[in-house]
Structures are given as structure tokens and as C-alpha cells.
Picture: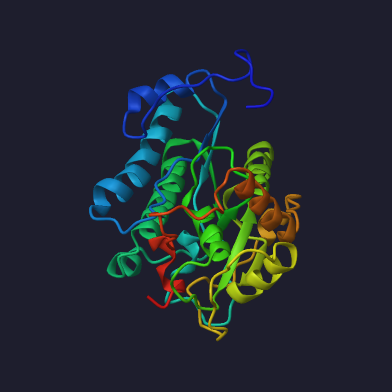
Length: 292
């Protein structure tokens, strides 16, 4: 990584279910950012082991390691998946930080990712309150932008599918989108602000599938793009507000910059080229946006 030196960056091998390894990583730290959580691209056969335990028990392990090592403040990355899915929320009212996804509703619908994120975030805030540890959570939506890692993450697979023109027709559903660099800024902001508290929604922009395709076609006309039926749908991806975060001084970039920088990154990495024997598939996490 640019600017990394043995003095400025130390790397530890750890697993969120290994508390001893976590303790070694956080020892001597004043603040910790807990980012790790499974975001499955495929349908999960064993949700307890693959999603729920790493998300919920893993988060508690991190917090316990922080308590034992006198860490002052922990910022936990949650998700708007822990906000959206609440059938009791009044229709037409934009959701804010007071809205929580209903874990039983999510589990009944086998939405293990949303259930795990909801349970982990609630457990984190409860732990902080009971144990005198300052815990702040940030809830990003679909995160796009340039990749640091060599492998593609699940949310980037969504944009790649849209650009390469996957085999399934996509519904014209709305998406909440945020730039990964703006998420990083948000994490630093809530860490550094002394008066930051509880949870912050991190979802500045909203766009439908059709509008996203049209926007990208203007800048990159030579890709196949997914077929979109053009109808308007009631979406599980509801309207949310980031007003609480912007009131701290958060200033996210324009969505056009996020999308174009994502595409440039994908092009450079060769991710938009067709590979024989490797069909482009929509991640299962976003199956609601497809006709299949």
C-alpha cells in the first residue's frame, strides 16, 4: 500500500473467531475499526457457520479483546441491511437511525446477511453500553469504487454484472450507493468526533438500474449491459437518510465519479473481459433484482 512502512503499518494474521489472535492485533491501540463480516455472493448452505457466527460472535470477540486491552473507542461497520427490512415502519416515511431491520422477518425470508448485520450491530451497541466501551456503528449501503484488493467483492460483482450484460433480465429497482472512499472518510469522522454516538447511516445517493445503465452508457458505450425491463418496482431497498452523518461534516462525492472510477478500476484489472467457461452471474445477495 502506498506510504506503508514497517513503522506506519503492522499486519497481523487473525480470525474473528480467534480471540487470542484479535487481542494481539489490538494490544496498544487507542481505537479500533471493525470492518470484517461475510458478504456471501452465493446462496449459503450453512448460514449459522458461514454468516451468523462470524458476524455476531466475531464482533463480540473483537469488542471483548478491545475491552481487555483498554481500547478507548471502536467503530463497527454495519450495513443499511440492518435498517431496511422492518415491515412495521410506516409507509412513505424515510428511514433513519431509529429504524432497525426485524431479525425474525429476515431469517424467515432466509436473508441471512441482513439478519447477521442486524444482530451484530445490536450486540455491539449493547456491549458498549454495558461494558463502558465507546462503540459507534456506521451503516453503508451498496459500496462501490476503486478496489484495493486483487479479488472482486460482492457489491462490485453487481456493477460488473450490469456492465457485462448478465443472462437474466434485471428489474428496474432503486439502489442506494456510496463510494468506498467516502465510507473510509465516514469511519474516520465518527472516530475523531468526540460527540459521535450510536449509529450513522452512510447512503448518500439513490439510482434505479435503468438510470444507472443509461448513465454508464454515455461514458462507456461499448459494453453489452444488462437488459432492464423498465418497470417501476416497490423495492426492499427503501429510502434512507444520511442527515445525521452529514451533520458531522461528511461530504460524499458525486455518484458519477464513483461509478466511473469503479469502471476504470475494473478495466485496468481486466474484470470486464468475457472469460470462456465463466459466465457472469448476479450475486445471490441481489436476487430480488432479477427475474430469476
